[in-house]
Length: 266
Image (spheres, rainbow, N blue to C red):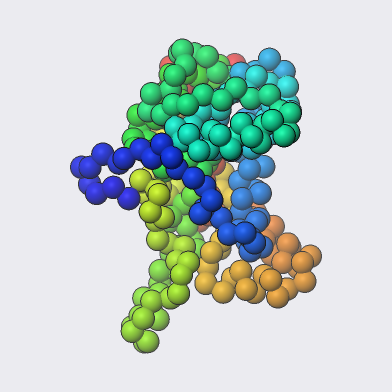
């Protein structure tokens, strides 16, 4: 992360190859699937809706949303990711307009989009506050903004930090990586449930906040799930997901939906 007072450098050649391992653990597969499901459900794309995916990456979400009949746009600053998105769209045949640009200065006219979606991206931006202001600017008066972000004060992070302190005290060492509570280097800001709400309320009239998944990344949790019969592992993951929806401050991912403060109800 950038030091306090420093302006994070925008990586115009950011590549997602390092983000996920080739083989996903059951909890990682579950959290990403559920985050995508709930984010796309919140976008609720219908015919004639104009939708913008900010920080679109490979444009997989934008392509999925386009199947609902809307007019989809994807915006990303990385030349590498835009190239991968174009290659993927050529293969799939989905229609998404891709545009290069920073979230802090979206290259679109104001009040253009009915839905503005930002999934797994706002904690990579140089200025999340300015980026969210831009999302609100390009949202139409009846539009919605949907944010999905990892919660680095989740129950999993809290418990894992405590376990690490205990291991350090007894054995004079840290738990082996990955350490779920540590912010990845390509993240410019730390988000959690309360930080997400504080940012959103400066720009949005918050309509809903949902939590997705519980205990993602907790030490040995993935190993336990792999050993369990798949139906039983799925039962535990779904049960914990319901708890996360009840307590989004504990959840692994926070999904927030709101309307620009200047907008009026539909």
